[in-house]
Length: 317
Length: 293
Image (cartoon, rainbow over all chains, first blue to last red; front, side):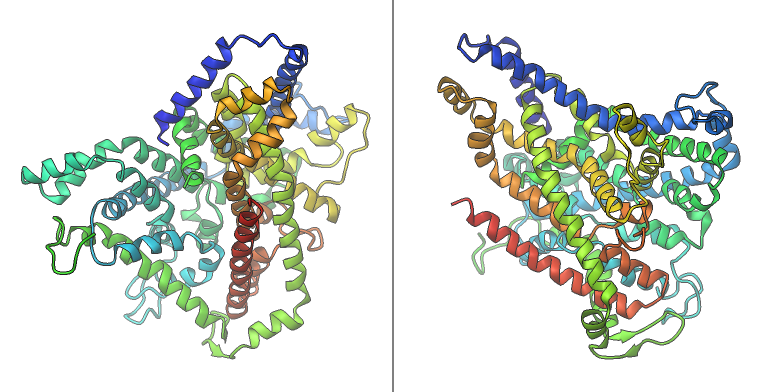
């Protein structure tokens, strides 16, 4: 199902709900009660979703006077808007945001490129080994992340000729402490290859044949004809990759624990925990959290449909 | 289908070039690490010295003498199981309500909020909410006249809290997956049921759930498998505490590797956990498929 289909379906259902006259049957009153209950439930759930976020935004604005009052005040009596400025002045936020942007954008671009190319090959060519390559893409998705943390860490550490290592990978620190260590292990996403393959199979064969008859090279066909036709899929994958890697922290923390200059927003905020003992600092932490959530929130507001369609595609295999 | 000897379809070597990055990646970041991992599992190695071959000793130790390992496996099952038992029905019911509501885009956006947030932010945000007497959760319970909980400092409640936060995180996505499946249920079935006087509950349990069973199987299995290997939120929120109450196996192994520097034993543990997950995955698919008949 494409994004467009999904929206058509939904619009359809909304129209039906809006115009479908309630059937004049005995259950009518009960149905009206059910109709109201529906929104009560959804609103209650929505509050549970939003309140924790609101709690942090509000907490960031509390002054020490609010915190030390007895009992502590929940709503700040004198909102400390300056805390958002202090976050940038007192924490290396600029560095973290820079690293987050560099790492996330690079991974996103690389993943979209590798997924599109591989998906295109699997969808539209017949070649010896295709079935096995496809099996690999599906099968590799089953290996959980925790299996790879230790071996990849040391494969990067002992990468030959990198970071002062000799040809046998000894003597230096290898790729640890470089952006490459944060990006390379995520250069390919099996899910992304799978997703792109699904989309490429929907392109009409005549378009490709026509281009081939005109003498277009395979790369040109891919670049000029296939890619523009799957823009929604590219956007879906890009948004998905961006959000995932903007938020990723286990791998990045493992690699950058000893390299603070490479830490991203979530890692930086996570490793600060021990410095947030006194209550004034707590507000600072809450403000930093709020700032870290903001960029994806904006992206989400602008491109919600692509992100939602990403989780749909993963389910409707 | 290409017959032997027939000319290859146009394209020649092109597909191999398109796949080259994936092949390279497979070698460097799939085959090599997995092989390395298996080899490591038969060694004793702290990265400061040379690895020493110890045969199956690490497996034997973990399975027969490491009570902590078994304890974390128990926690892992409780965590993943609770995620499914609480999370799936909740998302299913919510999807049913959602699919009949108006203003879907807005509802969906709200229920999706946690999905776009990092586990670091989620962990800290909830630490504040679940804080002592003056956290939001206990304040609200207090308004309702209820005594609050020691959400994160009581061992039992800590696991409950972790599960609830994880359900909170996942419910929006699962709801969207379910509601997509619900959209595919033929509308005339509901209309016929309504003619027969069937209420919302009957429609839900007798029409919706049986028809979207594949989606339910999918979410159940992926939630469980995901839950078995998951530890990001737990690491950020409780670090496995208090007193190991939320220490799941994946987190235990992560700490074994990067704090205690026991790379061989942690690799062996990872293989054991992976084997358990693989077996359970196959079993779950079989069980859930058979029940359909």
